[in-house]
Length: 172
Ligand SMILES: Nc1nc2c(c(=O)[nH]1)N[C@H]1C(S)=C(S)[C@@H](COP(=O)(O)O)O[C@H]1N2
Ligand SMILES: [Mo]
Image 1 (cartoon, rainbow, N blue to C red):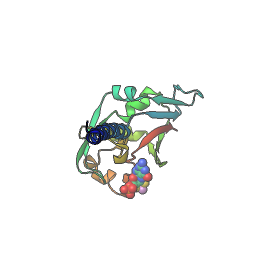
Image 2 (cartoon, helix red, strand yellow):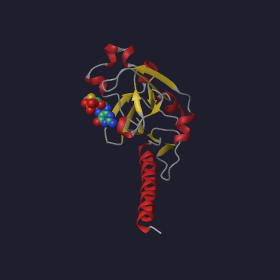
Image 3 (cartoon, helix red, strand yellow):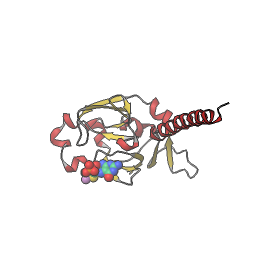
Image 4 (cartoon, rainbow, N blue to C red):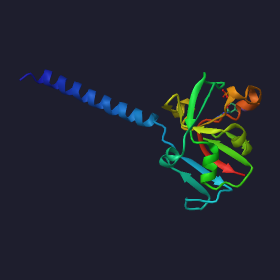
């Protein structure tokens, strides 16, 4: 018996197995699972302290999808897809005129609810058919039809509305 060769083969097998596990782990870490907390002036809550309604990935994916094809300051002309902000607000029974959008990187931007009607704003979870990674504007990215309203939605002030890494909404 050649124990040295057998040992080497065993180590090679182990390395392949560990490599596969590592890739699985990385894949799962990258796959941005979707969730969104809606708080403030909402009609329904489902958390212990009755302050927010936590939308699960399944709920977000079950909402009708809308697509906006536009360029942004960070991305070339692409098709973004996800539920409309209006449908999310309807689902939680939002009663207010402004929405504070909160992100994983602790950025906050306040947008008027009237943007829903005016621009058909969507909360995108995919770009060109691929789910957005946290490292690439995911898991949720507020998208406005910039190319359709260039004068209103271009420039530094408008850029602040394109909020990525969204984790929650507070209705005011
Ligand atoms: N998640 C997240 N989205 C964000 C921001 C942020 O800090 N975090 N900054 C906003 C603001 S104020 C502007 S002007 C642009 C900034 O884009 P930049 O970081 O490429 O300059 O993105 C907007 N979206
Ligand atoms: Mo900004």
